[in-house]
Image (cartoon, rainbow, N blue to C red):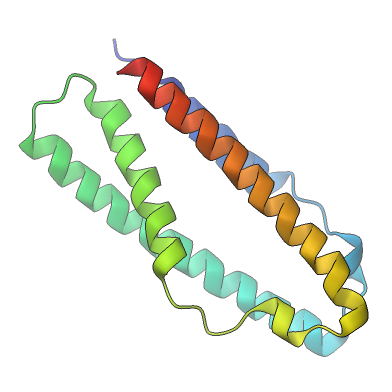
Length: 135
Protein backbone atom coordinates (compact mmCIF):
# COMPACT_ATOMS: atom_id res chain seq x y z
CA UNK A 1 0.00 0.00 0.00
CA UNK A 2 1.34 3.39 -0.99
CA UNK A 3 1.36 6.18 1.56
CA UNK A 4 2.45 9.68 0.84
CA UNK A 5 3.19 12.28 3.50
CA UNK A 6 3.11 14.88 0.73
CA UNK A 7 -0.59 14.24 0.16
CA UNK A 8 -1.34 14.63 3.84
CA UNK A 9 0.58 17.88 4.08
CA UNK A 10 -1.26 19.30 1.07
CA UNK A 11 -4.61 18.17 2.50
CA UNK A 12 -3.84 19.93 5.79
CA UNK A 13 -2.73 23.02 3.84
CA UNK A 14 -6.03 23.15 1.94
CA UNK A 15 -7.99 22.70 5.17
CA UNK A 16 -6.04 25.43 6.97
CA UNK A 17 -6.37 27.79 4.00
CA UNK A 18 -10.07 27.17 3.50
CA UNK A 19 -11.45 26.82 7.01
CA UNK A 20 -9.08 28.33 9.54
CA UNK A 21 -8.67 31.78 8.00
CA UNK A 22 -10.41 34.35 10.18
CA UNK A 23 -11.33 37.81 8.94
CA UNK A 24 -8.50 40.16 9.72
CA UNK A 25 -8.78 43.57 11.30
CA UNK A 26 -8.14 45.18 7.92
CA UNK A 27 -10.97 43.22 6.29
CA UNK A 28 -13.38 44.37 8.96
CA UNK A 29 -12.41 48.00 8.29
CA UNK A 30 -13.15 47.97 4.55
CA UNK A 31 -15.79 50.27 3.11
CA UNK A 32 -18.79 48.71 1.35
CA UNK A 33 -17.22 49.38 -2.05
CA UNK A 34 -13.93 47.84 -0.94
CA UNK A 35 -15.77 44.79 0.41
CA UNK A 36 -17.37 44.30 -3.02
CA UNK A 37 -13.97 44.52 -4.68
CA UNK A 38 -12.56 42.10 -2.08
CA UNK A 39 -15.30 39.58 -2.85
CA UNK A 40 -14.65 39.94 -6.58
CA UNK A 41 -10.90 39.44 -6.07
CA UNK A 42 -11.54 36.44 -3.81
CA UNK A 43 -13.86 34.79 -6.35
CA UNK A 44 -11.41 35.43 -9.19
CA UNK A 45 -8.52 33.92 -7.22
CA UNK A 46 -10.61 30.88 -6.27
CA UNK A 47 -11.52 30.40 -9.93
CA UNK A 48 -7.87 30.65 -11.02
CA UNK A 49 -6.82 28.20 -8.30
CA UNK A 50 -9.63 25.77 -9.22
CA UNK A 51 -8.77 25.87 -12.93
CA UNK A 52 -5.09 25.33 -12.11
CA UNK A 53 -5.91 22.39 -9.87
CA UNK A 54 -8.20 20.82 -12.47
CA UNK A 55 -5.64 21.26 -15.26
CA UNK A 56 -2.93 19.97 -12.91
CA UNK A 57 -4.99 16.87 -12.15
CA UNK A 58 -5.45 16.22 -15.88
CA UNK A 59 -1.73 16.68 -16.59
CA UNK A 60 -0.85 14.52 -13.58
CA UNK A 61 -3.23 11.78 -14.66
CA UNK A 62 -1.67 11.73 -18.14
CA UNK A 63 1.89 11.66 -16.75
CA UNK A 64 1.09 8.90 -14.25
CA UNK A 65 -0.77 6.90 -16.93
CA UNK A 66 2.03 7.16 -19.50
CA UNK A 67 4.94 6.51 -17.13
CA UNK A 68 5.74 3.73 -14.72
CA UNK A 69 6.45 5.54 -11.50
CA UNK A 70 7.24 3.83 -8.23
CA UNK A 71 4.69 5.93 -6.33
CA UNK A 72 1.92 6.94 -8.74
CA UNK A 73 -0.48 8.39 -6.14
CA UNK A 74 2.24 10.50 -4.58
CA UNK A 75 3.33 11.66 -8.05
CA UNK A 76 -0.28 12.51 -8.92
CA UNK A 77 -0.76 14.72 -5.85
CA UNK A 78 2.69 16.27 -6.21
CA UNK A 79 2.29 17.16 -9.87
CA UNK A 80 -1.24 18.45 -9.35
CA UNK A 81 -0.13 20.71 -6.50
CA UNK A 82 2.96 21.99 -8.29
CA UNK A 83 1.01 22.67 -11.49
CA UNK A 84 -1.76 24.49 -9.61
CA UNK A 85 0.77 26.71 -7.79
CA UNK A 86 2.60 27.48 -11.03
CA UNK A 87 -0.67 28.19 -12.86
CA UNK A 88 -1.91 30.47 -10.06
CA UNK A 89 1.39 32.34 -10.04
CA UNK A 90 1.51 33.05 -13.78
CA UNK A 91 -2.22 33.53 -14.44
CA UNK A 92 -3.13 37.18 -15.05
CA UNK A 93 -5.23 38.84 -12.37
CA UNK A 94 -7.68 41.62 -13.18
CA UNK A 95 -6.86 43.70 -10.10
CA UNK A 96 -5.15 43.58 -6.75
CA UNK A 97 -6.80 44.51 -3.48
CA UNK A 98 -3.85 46.68 -2.54
CA UNK A 99 -4.69 49.05 -5.40
CA UNK A 100 -8.11 49.77 -3.87
CA UNK A 101 -7.00 50.57 -0.33
CA UNK A 102 -6.42 53.90 1.35
CA UNK A 103 -2.92 54.61 2.65
CA UNK A 104 -4.02 53.95 6.24
CA UNK A 105 -5.25 50.45 5.26
CA UNK A 106 -2.21 49.38 3.23
CA UNK A 107 0.02 48.60 6.23
CA UNK A 108 -2.60 46.20 7.64
CA UNK A 109 -3.06 44.60 4.23
CA UNK A 110 0.68 44.02 3.85
CA UNK A 111 0.60 42.16 7.18
CA UNK A 112 -2.25 39.97 5.89
CA UNK A 113 -0.37 39.35 2.64
CA UNK A 114 2.85 38.46 4.49
CA UNK A 115 0.97 36.04 6.75
CA UNK A 116 -0.48 34.29 3.68
CA UNK A 117 2.93 34.26 2.00
CA UNK A 118 4.60 32.70 5.07
CA UNK A 119 1.85 30.06 5.36
CA UNK A 120 2.23 29.14 1.69
CA UNK A 121 6.02 28.98 1.94
CA UNK A 122 5.86 26.82 5.07
CA UNK A 123 3.49 24.28 3.57
CA UNK A 124 5.33 24.23 0.25
CA UNK A 125 8.61 23.56 2.06
CA UNK A 126 7.03 20.76 4.11
CA UNK A 127 5.46 19.27 1.01
CA UNK A 128 8.68 19.31 -1.01
CA UNK A 129 10.62 17.85 1.94
CA UNK A 130 8.06 15.05 2.28
CA UNK A 131 8.27 14.37 -1.44
CA UNK A 132 12.07 14.25 -1.41
CA UNK A 133 12.17 11.95 1.61
CA UNK A 134 9.62 9.67 -0.08
CA UNK A 135 11.71 9.36 -3.24
